[in-house]
Length: 179
Image 1: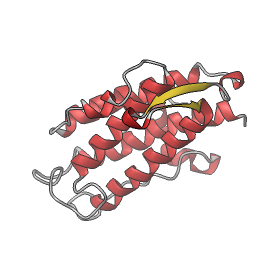
Image 2 (image 1 turned 90 degrees about the horizontal axis):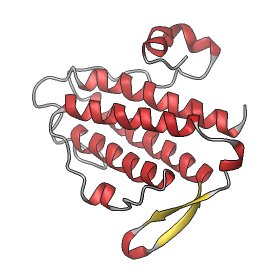
Image 3 (image 1 turned 180 degrees about the horizontal axis):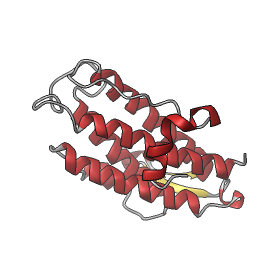
């Protein structure tokens, strides 16, 4: 598998994982979405909003959109999980489209990440994507752990890449158009 193919699969995995996670989040009892919990961000709502804001920041850098830190400084958190899910779905599709347009020649190309007062830093596209996918998995894991303290069982999020796992996810992958 080439690095471009790997990133395309990671973008699809991101979409699939978020779909699974949000299906459970949308089933939470009233008050559980915003309830204070023990984690880096103190609620499921704050953690999911953080994932979305940072996705927007890095996608803007990757697409060379020029928004920079305003992507998260001006971010207005969603208070309702259905609206947050729709916004995350749109970012996931944007990431899939970005990765679909990549070639191997794009991997070492540098794009500027605007870090505000810290300055502007040219970063390799492959490094930014690797960081973005690690960031998403890290914070989704926190939401997964927080779900364990709710009325909704956390979903399985690690059965995506292997042929052995395909029967476990076939319906979802086809529904999401990721096959």
